[in-house]
Image (cartoon, rainbow, N blue to C red; front, side, top):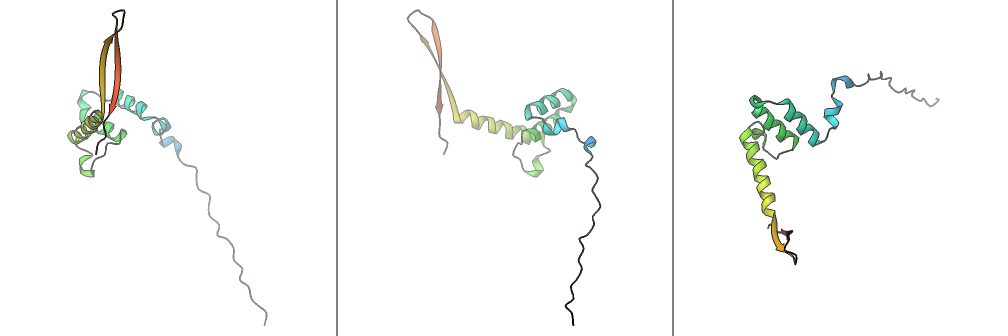
Length: 116
């Protein structure tokens, strides 16, 4: 009896259509965070304050729990907390000295604090 071999053919898939790029705003997708912040700022009015804060929180990736992402007060609280933590981690000391001619020289000293 001869050895039988199976004939296997690869499946024929139909070709996928090209992606609908006209549905995406490529400038918005590839824009930096500064440009996106400027676009949101120019788009919003005084009546859109809650939407503006939520958009900024999304752009800046503010770390919030899922239930707080729609609360503007929670977004502002977290942003200000992060800002205060940064300000306390870096202290700026300004010293004004006078040289021999009587002109004042402003010196900036950075004192880094280690938070533990």
